[in-house]
Amino acid sequence: MTAARAGAKSRRPEAGVWPFVRGSTRVVGIIGDPVEHSLSPLMHNAAFAALGLDWVYVPFPVRAGALPAAVRGLAALGVVGANVTVPHKEAVGRYVDELSPLAKRVGAVNTIVCRSGRLYGDNTDVYGVRQALRRVKLRGATAVVVGAGGAARAVLVALEALGVRRVLLVNRTLERARVLRRKFSSGGFHVEVRDFSALVEARYLKEVRLVVNTTSLGLHGEPFPAVAFELTPRECVAFDLIYGRWTDFLRRARAADRKTIDGSEMLLHQGAEAFRLWTGRRAPLEVMRSALAGVETAR
Ligand code: ATR
Image 1 (cartoon, rainbow, N blue to C red):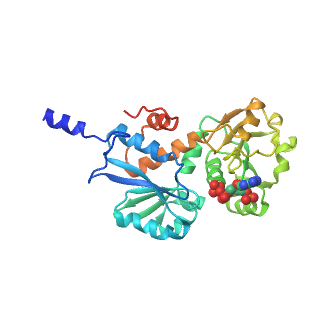
Image 2 (cartoon, rainbow, N blue to C red):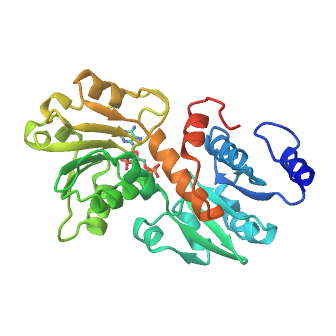
């Protein structure tokens, strides 16, 4: 008995040790284009290894035209689930069998769960944003959200859930922001559309508790338009969805001595929630956080 258990233990999958994929290995992955730079495989494979789960997380590079076939193929191949990333988060909802209420509300799916051959589309980005902002007091607050794409939609849903009362939605293309205002404004949650000039005006900034960058500006080192963080209250927080680098947006906040949060906590927590949906197990957060930080603590 003891020997058998020891034997089984010695065959456990180990991070980075090849070959650990066997006939029994359960597969999850990420659908996107590109997916080469995704940190999700690293984070999830570290978590599987730490818990001794016979699972593997793989990249699935999928072009837009191949999306319907790829999604249906998940069920056909017995894949347990998948994350969905740029540029498919909005389109993929059309190809799953069922959407969670949150995925419907956001209008985007970032996690697919395959159950008995049926595909269930969910959104864990909202949870990721909520967790990243868990230490910021936002009840009744005013926030600025820059950007009006898919990421902004998840942020708006999260901010409403966190009790934010008013959002100034700043976007280059105002019509796109107006679409979001129509969709997300409700009785206790007011969305107002502004252009970039609002980011340097005291009358807008003086009550702002949070400024969020949901645009891709900074992903490749691009400069961010001026934000007069010095006109915000001292406790104002800057949150950039981009992770793993000091973006121009965050640098501006730091220069004004405002607290900053980058996108790695959101990445971590959206992943942890997807992990829970697939495996039914609580994700090993510290293992995943260390994997993202590039520290090998999986075993
Ligand atoms: P995602 O789903 O990741 O949010 P998206 O839907 O392509 O991606 O949205 C990208 C966001 O970044 C948009 O708000 C976009 O502004 P527009 O709606 O005006 O296109 C913003 N964005 C991207 N490049 C930008 C740039 N150079 N200047 C200003 N905003 C930019």
